Amino acid sequence: MLSIGEFAYLGGVSVRMLRHYDSLGLVVPAATDEWTRRRSYEMSQLPRLRQLLALKDLGFGLDEVGPLLDRSLSLEDMLAMLRDREREVQEDLFAGQERLARIRERLRVLEMEHEMPEYTLTSLSALDFVQTQRTVAGSEEVPLYISGMYDRLEAACERAGSAVTGPSIATYLAGDDGLLVTAALTVSDPSSVLAEDGALSEGHEPEVLRAATLTHEGRIQDIGVSWQTLGNQLAAAGLELRGPCREIYHRTGDGDGGWVVELQQPLV
Image (cartoon, rainbow, N blue to C red; front, side, top):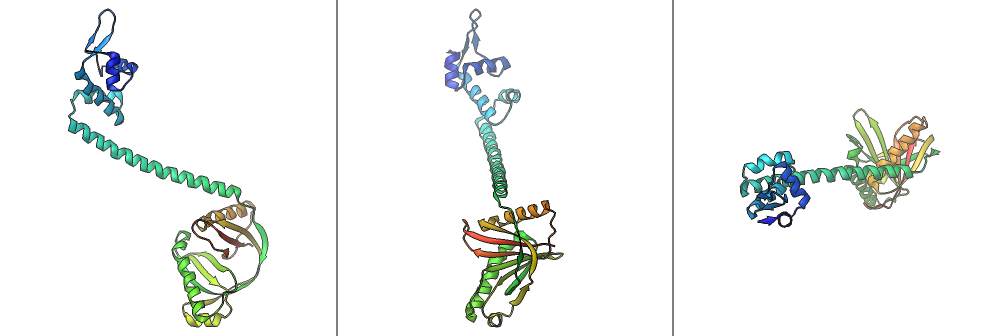
């Protein structure tokens, strides 16, 4: 026979928990001294205690454990239940990691919005350029195509021997059919560039007397946050948007940052 302390040690639980299991009728001592009330256990009771602990780890409550123990679960039954529980925990961990990633992303966005400077009111000069255009379903599709659109423009300029004379330009105009995306370059010899690629065209943006501008610095993936912040600021000021918005790429970086892009939103 084992004392309650010895049995608790072998089972990896506290004496207090053994007394609790006894009170619930889950692991009852093999003998209890009539006078001292000291509990004694047998080695043969250890498998039941270990099954109880395994079932608790599976997520079963103590009120559910008793009937399961009384079924005298085989090793195969316990293995199957543990494997099922392992899968459930893995799924919970994956879902929790996804939620944590969304929370961290939301925190990062809010911190960016908090640190973003106020917009500046200014006028915008007219722009003449060569362009390629594409209509996409929404802003989430822009990264799929915009890089290739600039590659096409730059390749035509190189073949034509025409120098790029200013920063890259992008404009966005929302319509009933989707978002019209324009990628554009100002070049020294537009006609020779157009002759190299018949799918390109000349583009023009007129002078804008009143516009709000905000400079985005950092990762290009975060430029949507800067546009959202600018939109929130303009809405709070009661300013009305007019015409396509523009992006002027003063410096290009990589996926880790280094981008400097001027956001330009014409206003009524």
